Length: 184
Image (cartoon, rainbow, N blue to C red; front, side):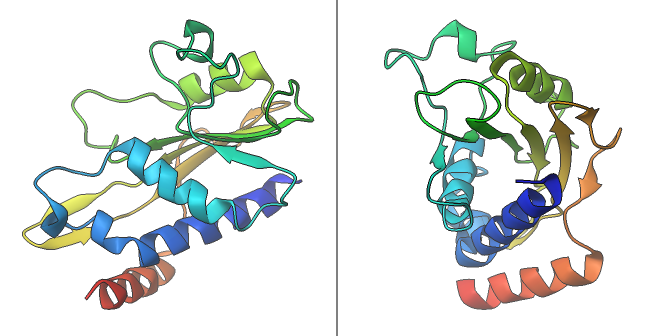
């Protein structure tokens, strides 16, 4: 699968996550932000519908079948979502590694950056890795997301030096409006 095709599939999955699970992001669902793990689960749920059925979509998959081993961690971080063939190794069996951040752009303690995703990608031979920062902002009972992503390929490293918006402003406004209507 080429990068542009995979990006399109991930964008569709993210759109479905935002529209169908909007209440996950709104302050009315609790006092804290949703966890990266929860968001990755929902993203994976919708991504599963866009990739060929031969691929497995997992969250924090542990190849050893035991407690998550140190070897699948990098600087204490593990990927939130992977698309792979379970039990197989190498780039032909490891398609995508994803790390999700709720809002690393404004966190005082920054989460893992593209370097972390790149290190995990190289260690396990994932063809592609992506860092997705939702940039969730809440004000009163209103929530907004401004998703940015940064992609790397195993052969060439980061696609761009900085994260890029997932959507244009117009498309994001339409998605957000659909999500709010669906959540009401």
